Image (cartoon, rainbow, N blue to C red; front, side, top):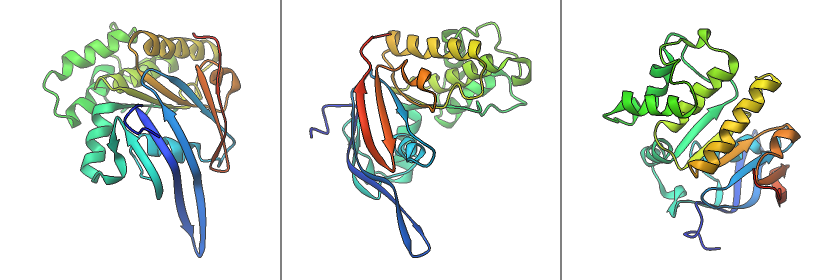
Length: 233
């Protein structure tokens, strides 16, 4: 496998956890290649290893065994500081529960990763991100003054503020009604198409998984299905 050809390359990745004297493999020999600009859904039953895989892809954790290259960088050789730099520079995270700070405005919430990254033009970048998700007129609103769909848009804007290459979305529509779900999925599709952002989306909903251009199904820490979805959104 050419680790320098794709944005994300996992080869024979295992993640082991010890429970007493028992060793459990949350991931068990995962091979996964993701090219820049792809839109992939990851599905699987509870306990299948989806969250562990997302944590590794997001540089929040490292494999116990195997190789993980991100944009040509051997992630296993990076320090905690190196992992943090890659997270802040390359990866935007979107969460099911939005993870917005309730006492901060939409603009202030979006500025947070820019503060951690010591970005100079924080307000300017945050405003651009909010405008990109259609919330240019809600910058001074607190989370409690926004609908669920709008709060998730703020969450997506926060993920986009650092101009990442990869958007990792963990059940991004899990707390939304059907109308807001459609709104958020259209936004994610549009970002993938127009901004060429690589999207990796974890979901337990088949309808959401089918919106991706490629679907990966994981069971007991192994990828059991990896298929192109055919129609391009």
